[in-house]
Figure (cartoon, rainbow, N blue to C red):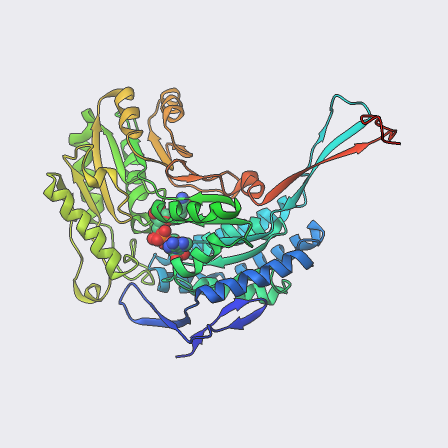
Length: 493
Ligand code: NAD
Protein backbone atom coordinates (compact mmCIF):
# COMPACT_ATOMS: atom_id res chain seq x y z
CA UNK A 1 0.00 0.00 0.00
CA UNK A 2 1.44 3.37 -1.03
CA UNK A 3 1.92 5.91 1.78
CA UNK A 4 -0.21 9.02 1.29
CA UNK A 5 1.78 12.25 1.69
CA UNK A 6 1.03 15.66 3.15
CA UNK A 7 1.00 18.85 1.08
CA UNK A 8 3.68 21.37 2.02
CA UNK A 9 4.49 24.46 -0.03
CA UNK A 10 2.68 23.11 -3.09
CA UNK A 11 4.47 19.72 -3.05
CA UNK A 12 3.38 16.28 -1.88
CA UNK A 13 5.81 15.38 0.89
CA UNK A 14 6.56 12.48 3.25
CA UNK A 15 8.04 13.01 6.69
CA UNK A 16 11.83 12.66 6.81
CA UNK A 17 11.94 9.86 9.38
CA UNK A 18 9.53 7.74 7.32
CA UNK A 19 6.92 7.31 10.06
CA UNK A 20 3.63 5.96 8.76
CA UNK A 21 0.15 5.83 10.34
CA UNK A 22 -2.42 3.18 9.53
CA UNK A 23 -5.90 4.57 8.84
CA UNK A 24 -8.77 2.23 9.75
CA UNK A 25 -12.37 1.84 8.68
CA UNK A 26 -14.39 2.02 11.92
CA UNK A 27 -17.06 -0.28 10.46
CA UNK A 28 -14.68 -3.28 10.44
CA UNK A 29 -11.28 -1.99 11.61
CA UNK A 30 -9.62 -3.00 8.34
CA UNK A 31 -6.82 -0.85 6.95
CA UNK A 32 -8.02 1.81 4.53
CA UNK A 33 -4.76 3.61 3.87
CA UNK A 34 -1.28 4.38 5.13
CA UNK A 35 -0.43 8.04 5.59
CA UNK A 36 2.79 9.82 6.40
CA UNK A 37 2.93 10.75 10.10
CA UNK A 38 4.59 14.14 10.42
CA UNK A 39 6.69 15.50 13.26
CA UNK A 40 7.30 18.78 15.04
CA UNK A 41 10.06 19.32 12.46
CA UNK A 42 7.51 19.05 9.62
CA UNK A 43 5.29 21.54 11.45
CA UNK A 44 8.21 23.97 11.71
CA UNK A 45 8.93 23.50 7.99
CA UNK A 46 5.28 24.19 7.10
CA UNK A 47 5.31 27.32 9.28
CA UNK A 48 8.47 28.60 7.54
CA UNK A 49 6.83 28.08 4.11
CA UNK A 50 3.66 29.82 5.25
CA UNK A 51 5.63 32.71 6.75
CA UNK A 52 7.49 33.23 3.48
CA UNK A 53 4.31 32.88 1.44
CA UNK A 54 2.56 35.44 3.62
CA UNK A 55 5.44 37.91 3.77
CA UNK A 56 6.31 37.77 0.06
CA UNK A 57 2.96 36.91 -1.54
CA UNK A 58 1.27 36.58 -3.90
CA UNK A 59 -1.73 35.26 -1.93
CA UNK A 60 -2.20 38.05 0.67
CA UNK A 61 -1.58 40.80 -1.92
CA UNK A 62 -4.00 39.39 -4.46
CA UNK A 63 -7.18 41.40 -5.02
CA UNK A 64 -10.16 39.91 -3.25
CA UNK A 65 -12.04 38.99 -6.47
CA UNK A 66 -8.98 37.06 -7.68
CA UNK A 67 -8.75 35.10 -4.42
CA UNK A 68 -12.49 34.53 -4.59
CA UNK A 69 -12.09 32.98 -8.04
CA UNK A 70 -9.80 30.29 -6.56
CA UNK A 71 -12.39 29.53 -3.87
CA UNK A 72 -15.25 29.34 -6.40
CA UNK A 73 -13.15 26.96 -8.50
CA UNK A 74 -12.47 24.80 -5.46
CA UNK A 75 -16.19 24.70 -4.62
CA UNK A 76 -16.96 23.51 -8.16
CA UNK A 77 -14.31 20.77 -7.86
CA UNK A 78 -15.80 19.63 -4.53
CA UNK A 79 -19.21 19.42 -6.19
CA UNK A 80 -17.72 17.48 -9.10
CA UNK A 81 -16.17 14.92 -6.70
CA UNK A 82 -18.91 15.08 -4.04
CA UNK A 83 -19.94 11.43 -4.16
CA UNK A 84 -16.34 10.18 -4.04
CA UNK A 85 -15.57 12.55 -1.14
CA UNK A 86 -18.70 11.49 0.74
CA UNK A 87 -17.97 7.79 0.20
CA UNK A 88 -14.41 8.23 1.47
CA UNK A 89 -15.70 10.18 4.48
CA UNK A 90 -18.06 7.36 5.36
CA UNK A 91 -15.29 4.77 5.05
CA UNK A 92 -12.90 6.78 7.22
CA UNK A 93 -15.27 8.32 9.78
CA UNK A 94 -18.10 5.76 9.79
CA UNK A 95 -21.04 8.18 9.45
CA UNK A 96 -23.88 7.05 7.17
CA UNK A 97 -23.42 8.01 3.54
CA UNK A 98 -26.53 10.22 3.54
CA UNK A 99 -24.86 12.38 6.23
CA UNK A 100 -21.51 12.45 4.44
CA UNK A 101 -23.25 13.66 1.25
CA UNK A 102 -24.62 16.65 3.20
CA UNK A 103 -21.10 17.35 4.50
CA UNK A 104 -19.66 17.45 0.97
CA UNK A 105 -22.42 19.78 -0.24
CA UNK A 106 -22.00 22.00 2.84
CA UNK A 107 -18.22 22.16 2.32
CA UNK A 108 -18.70 23.46 -1.24
CA UNK A 109 -21.32 25.95 0.00
CA UNK A 110 -18.92 27.23 2.66
CA UNK A 111 -16.17 27.98 0.08
CA UNK A 112 -18.76 29.75 -2.11
CA UNK A 113 -20.12 31.78 0.81
CA UNK A 114 -16.70 33.16 1.79
CA UNK A 115 -15.69 33.67 -1.85
CA UNK A 116 -18.73 35.93 -2.13
CA UNK A 117 -18.33 37.62 1.24
CA UNK A 118 -14.71 38.70 0.75
CA UNK A 119 -15.69 40.89 -2.21
CA UNK A 120 -18.29 42.79 -0.16
CA UNK A 121 -17.53 46.06 1.70
CA UNK A 122 -15.40 45.47 4.81
CA UNK A 123 -13.96 48.73 6.15
CA UNK A 124 -15.75 51.70 7.71
CA UNK A 125 -15.31 55.46 7.74
CA UNK A 126 -15.48 57.49 10.97
CA UNK A 127 -16.54 61.07 11.65
CA UNK A 128 -13.91 62.12 14.22
CA UNK A 129 -13.72 65.35 16.25
CA UNK A 130 -10.90 66.91 14.20
CA UNK A 131 -12.33 68.22 10.91
CA UNK A 132 -8.89 68.03 9.27
CA UNK A 133 -8.76 64.26 9.76
CA UNK A 134 -10.51 61.61 7.71
CA UNK A 135 -10.45 58.38 9.66
CA UNK A 136 -11.28 54.98 8.16
CA UNK A 137 -10.47 51.32 8.59
CA UNK A 138 -9.23 48.65 6.21
CA UNK A 139 -9.32 44.94 6.96
CA UNK A 140 -6.18 42.90 6.42
CA UNK A 141 -5.30 39.23 6.78
CA UNK A 142 -3.85 38.20 10.15
CA UNK A 143 -0.93 36.23 8.71
CA UNK A 144 -0.01 32.59 9.20
CA UNK A 145 -2.95 30.59 10.56
CA UNK A 146 -2.70 27.15 12.15
CA UNK A 147 -6.01 25.30 11.83
CA UNK A 148 -6.50 22.16 13.92
CA UNK A 149 -9.61 20.04 13.38
CA UNK A 150 -11.26 16.94 14.90
CA UNK A 151 -12.36 13.63 13.41
CA UNK A 152 -16.15 13.94 13.50
CA UNK A 153 -16.62 16.18 10.43
CA UNK A 154 -13.24 15.91 8.71
CA UNK A 155 -14.16 17.48 5.36
CA UNK A 156 -16.65 20.03 6.67
CA UNK A 157 -14.37 21.25 9.47
CA UNK A 158 -11.57 21.67 6.90
CA UNK A 159 -13.93 23.84 4.86
CA UNK A 160 -15.08 25.87 7.89
CA UNK A 161 -11.42 26.68 8.61
CA UNK A 162 -9.89 27.06 5.14
CA UNK A 163 -12.72 28.97 3.43
CA UNK A 164 -12.72 32.11 5.63
CA UNK A 165 -8.98 31.88 6.33
CA UNK A 166 -8.02 31.78 2.66
CA UNK A 167 -10.71 34.24 1.54
CA UNK A 168 -9.23 36.78 3.95
CA UNK A 169 -5.76 36.32 2.42
CA UNK A 170 -4.10 34.33 5.20
CA UNK A 171 -1.64 31.51 4.61
CA UNK A 172 -3.20 28.47 6.27
CA UNK A 173 -1.79 25.24 7.65
CA UNK A 174 -4.51 22.63 8.20
CA UNK A 175 -3.84 19.84 10.73
CA UNK A 176 -6.53 17.14 10.54
CA UNK A 177 -7.18 14.61 13.30
CA UNK A 178 -4.78 11.66 13.20
CA UNK A 179 -7.56 9.14 12.56
CA UNK A 180 -9.36 10.92 9.68
CA UNK A 181 -6.98 12.57 7.22
CA UNK A 182 -8.32 10.98 4.02
CA UNK A 183 -10.87 13.53 2.80
CA UNK A 184 -8.45 16.34 3.70
CA UNK A 185 -5.86 14.72 1.42
CA UNK A 186 -8.47 14.61 -1.38
CA UNK A 187 -9.41 18.23 -0.67
CA UNK A 188 -5.79 19.27 -1.06
CA UNK A 189 -5.62 17.42 -4.41
CA UNK A 190 -8.45 19.72 -5.46
CA UNK A 191 -6.62 22.75 -4.01
CA UNK A 192 -3.63 21.76 -6.16
CA UNK A 193 -5.89 21.32 -9.20
CA UNK A 194 -7.45 24.74 -8.62
CA UNK A 195 -3.93 26.21 -8.78
CA UNK A 196 -3.67 27.98 -5.41
CA UNK A 197 -0.15 29.50 -5.07
CA UNK A 198 2.39 27.45 -3.04
CA UNK A 199 2.20 28.10 0.70
CA UNK A 200 -1.29 29.61 0.64
CA UNK A 201 -2.78 26.35 1.93
CA UNK A 202 -0.76 23.49 3.37
CA UNK A 203 -1.76 20.13 4.81
CA UNK A 204 0.20 18.95 7.84
CA UNK A 205 -0.39 15.34 8.93
CA UNK A 206 0.69 14.02 12.31
CA UNK A 207 0.02 13.70 16.03
CA UNK A 208 -1.78 16.43 17.94
CA UNK A 209 0.81 17.35 20.56
CA UNK A 210 3.79 17.28 18.14
CA UNK A 211 2.22 18.92 15.08
CA UNK A 212 -0.75 20.84 16.51
CA UNK A 213 1.25 21.77 19.61
CA UNK A 214 4.06 23.20 17.46
CA UNK A 215 1.55 25.32 15.53
CA UNK A 216 0.03 26.58 18.78
CA UNK A 217 3.37 27.50 20.35
CA UNK A 218 5.22 28.91 17.32
CA UNK A 219 6.18 32.59 17.38
CA UNK A 220 5.71 32.62 13.59
CA UNK A 221 2.06 31.60 13.69
CA UNK A 222 -0.27 34.56 14.09
CA UNK A 223 -3.56 32.79 14.68
CA UNK A 224 -4.77 29.39 15.83
CA UNK A 225 -8.23 28.17 14.98
CA UNK A 226 -9.07 24.99 16.85
CA UNK A 227 -12.03 22.66 16.93
CA UNK A 228 -11.87 19.78 19.37
CA UNK A 229 -12.14 18.88 23.03
CA UNK A 230 -12.16 21.45 25.83
CA UNK A 231 -9.06 19.96 27.50
CA UNK A 232 -7.04 20.28 24.26
CA UNK A 233 -8.49 23.76 23.72
CA UNK A 234 -7.19 24.86 27.11
CA UNK A 235 -3.68 23.52 26.28
CA UNK A 236 -3.75 25.35 22.94
CA UNK A 237 -4.81 28.61 24.54
CA UNK A 238 -1.92 28.33 27.00
CA UNK A 239 0.60 27.52 24.25
CA UNK A 240 -0.70 30.38 22.12
CA UNK A 241 -0.01 32.95 24.84
CA UNK A 242 3.71 33.21 23.92
CA UNK A 243 3.18 35.62 21.03
CA UNK A 244 -0.39 36.64 21.92
CA UNK A 245 -1.82 34.71 18.98
CA UNK A 246 -5.35 35.36 17.94
CA UNK A 247 -7.25 32.28 19.10
CA UNK A 248 -10.64 30.88 18.19
CA UNK A 249 -11.87 27.73 19.88
CA UNK A 250 -14.85 25.54 19.03
CA UNK A 251 -15.07 23.04 21.86
CA UNK A 252 -17.34 20.46 23.42
CA UNK A 253 -20.88 20.56 24.71
CA UNK A 254 -23.57 18.86 26.78
CA UNK A 255 -26.50 20.49 25.10
CA UNK A 256 -30.12 20.27 26.24
CA UNK A 257 -33.02 19.38 23.99
CA UNK A 258 -36.02 20.68 25.97
CA UNK A 259 -39.48 19.28 25.32
CA UNK A 260 -42.48 21.02 26.91
CA UNK A 261 -45.78 19.22 27.44
CA UNK A 262 -47.50 21.42 24.83
CA UNK A 263 -45.07 20.45 22.05
CA UNK A 264 -46.28 18.44 19.07
CA UNK A 265 -45.25 15.03 20.45
CA UNK A 266 -44.36 13.49 17.09
CA UNK A 267 -42.25 16.43 15.98
CA UNK A 268 -40.48 16.61 19.36
CA UNK A 269 -39.80 12.88 19.43
CA UNK A 270 -38.45 12.86 15.88
CA UNK A 271 -36.05 15.72 16.63
CA UNK A 272 -35.04 14.37 20.04
CA UNK A 273 -33.80 11.24 18.24
CA UNK A 274 -32.05 13.26 15.55
CA UNK A 275 -30.49 15.55 18.17
CA UNK A 276 -28.59 12.72 19.85
CA UNK A 277 -28.26 9.88 17.35
CA UNK A 278 -27.31 11.78 14.15
CA UNK A 279 -23.60 11.25 13.59
CA UNK A 280 -23.63 8.47 16.24
CA UNK A 281 -23.78 11.23 18.87
CA UNK A 282 -20.23 12.22 17.88
CA UNK A 283 -21.43 15.77 17.27
CA UNK A 284 -20.31 18.76 19.34
CA UNK A 285 -23.83 20.22 19.38
CA UNK A 286 -25.56 16.87 20.06
CA UNK A 287 -28.69 17.12 22.20
CA UNK A 288 -27.20 14.70 24.71
CA UNK A 289 -29.55 15.75 27.52
CA UNK A 290 -33.28 15.42 26.93
CA UNK A 291 -35.11 17.75 29.32
CA UNK A 292 -38.66 16.49 29.36
CA UNK A 293 -41.64 18.06 31.12
CA UNK A 294 -42.69 15.57 33.80
CA UNK A 295 -46.38 15.35 32.89
CA UNK A 296 -45.69 13.84 29.44
CA UNK A 297 -42.83 11.51 30.46
CA UNK A 298 -45.03 8.42 30.92
CA UNK A 299 -46.29 8.69 27.32
CA UNK A 300 -43.19 10.09 25.66
CA UNK A 301 -40.42 7.87 26.99
CA UNK A 302 -41.76 4.44 25.93
CA UNK A 303 -42.36 5.80 22.42
CA UNK A 304 -38.85 7.32 22.36
CA UNK A 305 -37.30 4.03 23.51
CA UNK A 306 -39.26 2.04 20.92
CA UNK A 307 -38.21 4.37 18.09
CA UNK A 308 -34.56 4.30 19.23
CA UNK A 309 -34.53 0.52 19.28
CA UNK A 310 -35.58 0.54 15.61
CA UNK A 311 -32.62 2.65 14.46
CA UNK A 312 -30.70 0.59 11.90
CA UNK A 313 -27.06 0.48 13.00
CA UNK A 314 -24.44 -0.71 10.53
CA UNK A 315 -21.79 0.10 7.96
CA UNK A 316 -22.43 3.64 6.75
CA UNK A 317 -22.07 2.55 3.12
CA UNK A 318 -25.12 0.28 3.41
CA UNK A 319 -28.10 2.36 2.20
CA UNK A 320 -30.27 0.95 5.01
CA UNK A 321 -27.90 2.23 7.71
CA UNK A 322 -29.21 5.06 9.91
CA UNK A 323 -26.38 5.12 12.45
CA UNK A 324 -22.75 4.11 11.95
CA UNK A 325 -19.86 2.88 14.12
CA UNK A 326 -17.88 4.96 16.62
CA UNK A 327 -14.57 6.29 15.44
CA UNK A 328 -12.12 3.86 17.14
CA UNK A 329 -12.22 0.83 19.45
CA UNK A 330 -10.72 3.07 22.17
CA UNK A 331 -13.49 5.63 21.78
CA UNK A 332 -16.11 2.85 21.84
CA UNK A 333 -14.59 1.62 25.13
CA UNK A 334 -14.80 5.15 26.52
CA UNK A 335 -18.48 5.38 25.59
CA UNK A 336 -19.17 1.91 27.08
CA UNK A 337 -17.33 3.08 30.21
CA UNK A 338 -19.78 5.98 30.53
CA UNK A 339 -22.69 3.57 30.14
CA UNK A 340 -21.26 1.44 32.95
CA UNK A 341 -20.74 4.56 35.09
CA UNK A 342 -24.36 5.60 34.50
CA UNK A 343 -25.61 2.25 35.75
CA UNK A 344 -23.25 2.28 38.74
CA UNK A 345 -24.52 5.74 39.71
CA UNK A 346 -28.11 4.47 39.66
CA UNK A 347 -29.51 5.58 36.30
CA UNK A 348 -31.54 3.09 34.25
CA UNK A 349 -31.38 2.30 30.54
CA UNK A 350 -34.69 2.14 28.73
CA UNK A 351 -33.01 1.13 25.50
CA UNK A 352 -29.56 0.05 24.30
CA UNK A 353 -26.75 0.22 26.82
CA UNK A 354 -24.46 -2.27 25.10
CA UNK A 355 -22.11 -2.93 22.21
CA UNK A 356 -23.62 -4.46 19.06
CA UNK A 357 -21.83 -7.60 17.89
CA UNK A 358 -24.29 -9.43 15.64
CA UNK A 359 -22.68 -10.82 12.48
CA UNK A 360 -20.42 -8.30 10.73
CA UNK A 361 -21.02 -5.71 13.46
CA UNK A 362 -18.60 -7.68 15.68
CA UNK A 363 -15.65 -6.39 13.64
CA UNK A 364 -16.59 -2.71 14.06
CA UNK A 365 -17.09 -0.20 16.86
CA UNK A 366 -20.88 -0.32 17.14
CA UNK A 367 -22.83 0.79 20.21
CA UNK A 368 -26.63 0.57 20.41
CA UNK A 369 -28.58 3.84 20.72
CA UNK A 370 -28.80 4.22 24.49
CA UNK A 371 -31.22 6.18 26.68
CA UNK A 372 -30.84 6.68 30.43
CA UNK A 373 -33.70 7.67 32.72
CA UNK A 374 -33.76 8.14 36.51
CA UNK A 375 -30.75 10.41 36.21
CA UNK A 376 -29.58 12.94 38.80
CA UNK A 377 -27.82 16.22 37.96
CA UNK A 378 -24.55 15.13 39.63
CA UNK A 379 -24.12 11.97 37.52
CA UNK A 380 -21.21 11.78 35.08
CA UNK A 381 -23.57 10.85 32.22
CA UNK A 382 -25.39 14.14 32.84
CA UNK A 383 -22.32 16.34 33.36
CA UNK A 384 -19.64 15.05 30.96
CA UNK A 385 -19.50 15.05 27.18
CA UNK A 386 -19.72 11.38 26.15
CA UNK A 387 -19.51 12.01 22.38
CA UNK A 388 -21.46 8.89 21.55
CA UNK A 389 -25.05 7.63 21.16
CA UNK A 390 -25.99 8.05 24.81
CA UNK A 391 -28.92 10.21 25.90
CA UNK A 392 -29.52 11.28 29.51
CA UNK A 393 -33.17 12.16 30.27
CA UNK A 394 -33.84 14.81 32.94
CA UNK A 395 -37.42 15.57 34.02
CA UNK A 396 -38.63 19.07 34.91
CA UNK A 397 -41.73 20.96 36.01
CA UNK A 398 -42.31 24.29 34.26
CA UNK A 399 -40.17 26.92 32.57
CA UNK A 400 -37.99 27.93 35.50
CA UNK A 401 -36.79 24.43 36.26
CA UNK A 402 -36.17 23.77 32.55
CA UNK A 403 -33.90 26.82 32.36
CA UNK A 404 -32.11 25.96 35.62
CA UNK A 405 -31.34 22.41 34.47
CA UNK A 406 -30.38 23.54 30.96
CA UNK A 407 -27.82 25.99 32.35
CA UNK A 408 -26.44 23.57 34.97
CA UNK A 409 -23.36 22.70 32.90
CA UNK A 410 -19.86 24.03 32.28
CA UNK A 411 -20.71 24.03 28.56
CA UNK A 412 -22.79 26.41 26.47
CA UNK A 413 -22.71 25.32 22.87
CA UNK A 414 -26.29 24.61 21.77
CA UNK A 415 -29.89 24.14 22.93
CA UNK A 416 -33.23 23.22 21.37
CA UNK A 417 -36.72 23.93 22.70
CA UNK A 418 -39.95 22.26 21.59
CA UNK A 419 -43.27 23.94 22.38
CA UNK A 420 -46.32 25.18 20.48
CA UNK A 421 -46.11 28.43 22.48
CA UNK A 422 -43.55 30.49 20.56
CA UNK A 423 -43.46 33.20 23.23
CA UNK A 424 -42.50 30.64 25.86
CA UNK A 425 -39.97 29.09 23.48
CA UNK A 426 -38.26 32.40 22.85
CA UNK A 427 -38.34 33.33 26.56
CA UNK A 428 -36.59 30.08 27.43
CA UNK A 429 -34.02 30.32 24.61
CA UNK A 430 -33.12 33.84 25.70
CA UNK A 431 -32.38 32.59 29.24
CA UNK A 432 -30.14 29.76 28.09
CA UNK A 433 -26.41 30.47 28.13
CA UNK A 434 -25.54 28.89 24.80
CA UNK A 435 -24.32 30.15 21.43
CA UNK A 436 -26.52 28.17 19.03
CA UNK A 437 -30.22 27.68 19.77
CA UNK A 438 -33.20 26.26 17.93
CA UNK A 439 -36.98 26.48 18.44
CA UNK A 440 -38.97 23.46 17.22
CA UNK A 441 -35.98 22.11 15.33
CA UNK A 442 -32.53 20.77 16.19
CA UNK A 443 -29.15 20.79 14.43
CA UNK A 444 -29.75 22.85 11.29
CA UNK A 445 -26.45 24.65 10.65
CA UNK A 446 -25.93 27.39 8.10
CA UNK A 447 -22.66 28.80 6.81
CA UNK A 448 -24.37 32.22 6.75
CA UNK A 449 -24.95 32.33 10.55
CA UNK A 450 -22.38 32.51 13.39
CA UNK A 451 -21.44 29.29 15.17
CA UNK A 452 -19.77 28.98 18.55
CA UNK A 453 -20.12 28.50 22.26
CA UNK A 454 -20.62 30.30 25.55
CA UNK A 455 -18.72 29.26 28.70
CA UNK A 456 -16.30 26.33 28.20
CA UNK A 457 -17.68 25.54 24.74
CA UNK A 458 -15.41 27.99 23.06
CA UNK A 459 -14.07 31.37 22.19
CA UNK A 460 -15.08 33.47 19.19
CA UNK A 461 -17.35 32.49 16.33
CA UNK A 462 -16.97 30.64 13.06
CA UNK A 463 -19.24 30.95 10.01
CA UNK A 464 -21.25 33.97 8.95
CA UNK A 465 -19.66 37.40 8.80
CA UNK A 466 -18.22 36.79 12.30
CA UNK A 467 -16.29 33.85 10.85
CA UNK A 468 -14.54 36.16 8.37
CA UNK A 469 -13.91 38.81 11.03
CA UNK A 470 -12.02 36.19 13.00
CA UNK A 471 -9.46 35.96 10.16
CA UNK A 472 -9.01 39.72 9.66
CA UNK A 473 -7.13 42.44 11.46
CA UNK A 474 -8.60 45.95 11.56
CA UNK A 475 -6.29 48.79 10.62
CA UNK A 476 -7.22 52.38 11.44
CA UNK A 477 -5.98 54.90 8.87
CA UNK A 478 -6.08 58.63 9.53
CA UNK A 479 -5.54 61.13 6.70
CA UNK A 480 -4.59 64.70 7.48
CA UNK A 481 -6.52 66.68 4.89
CA UNK A 482 -4.83 70.02 5.70
CA UNK A 483 -1.21 69.42 6.82
CA UNK A 484 0.44 72.33 8.62
CA UNK A 485 3.06 72.79 11.36
CA UNK A 486 1.92 71.35 14.68
CA UNK A 487 4.07 73.60 16.92
CA UNK A 488 3.88 71.28 19.96
CA UNK A 489 7.61 71.53 20.73
CA UNK A 490 8.88 75.10 20.64
CA UNK A 491 12.31 74.07 19.23
CA UNK A 492 10.88 72.34 16.16
CA UNK A 493 11.21 74.35 12.93
P1 NAD B 1 -9.21 16.47 20.36
O1 NAD B 1 -9.20 17.73 21.14
O2 NAD B 1 -8.63 15.26 20.97
O3 NAD B 1 -8.43 16.66 18.97
C1 NAD B 1 -8.76 17.66 18.05
C2 NAD B 1 -7.53 18.01 17.24
O4 NAD B 1 -6.54 18.53 18.11
C3 NAD B 1 -6.88 16.84 16.52
O5 NAD B 1 -6.43 17.27 15.25
C4 NAD B 1 -5.69 16.51 17.40
O6 NAD B 1 -4.63 15.92 16.69
C5 NAD B 1 -5.29 17.88 17.90
N1 NAD B 1 -4.57 17.90 19.17
C6 NAD B 1 -4.60 16.99 20.18
N2 NAD B 1 -3.78 17.36 21.18
C7 NAD B 1 -3.23 18.55 20.80
C8 NAD B 1 -2.32 19.45 21.42
N3 NAD B 1 -1.80 19.21 22.63
N4 NAD B 1 -1.98 20.57 20.77
C9 NAD B 1 -2.51 20.84 19.56
N5 NAD B 1 -3.36 20.03 18.91
C10 NAD B 1 -3.73 18.89 19.53
O7 NAD B 1 -10.71 16.29 19.94
P2 NAD B 1 -11.33 15.09 19.10
O8 NAD B 1 -11.41 13.93 20.00
O9 NAD B 1 -10.62 14.95 17.80
O10 NAD B 1 -12.78 15.70 18.78
C11 NAD B 1 -13.81 15.62 19.66
C12 NAD B 1 -14.06 16.93 20.36
O11 NAD B 1 -14.22 17.99 19.43
C13 NAD B 1 -15.33 16.92 21.17
O12 NAD B 1 -15.10 17.46 22.44
C14 NAD B 1 -16.27 17.82 20.39
O13 NAD B 1 -17.27 18.41 21.14
C15 NAD B 1 -15.36 18.79 19.78
N6 NAD B 1 -15.95 19.41 18.58
C16 NAD B 1 -16.42 20.69 18.67
C17 NAD B 1 -17.02 21.31 17.57
C18 NAD B 1 -17.56 22.72 17.65
O14 NAD B 1 -17.86 23.30 16.63
N7 NAD B 1 -17.68 23.30 18.83
C19 NAD B 1 -17.12 20.61 16.38
C20 NAD B 1 -16.64 19.30 16.31
C21 NAD B 1 -16.04 18.72 17.44
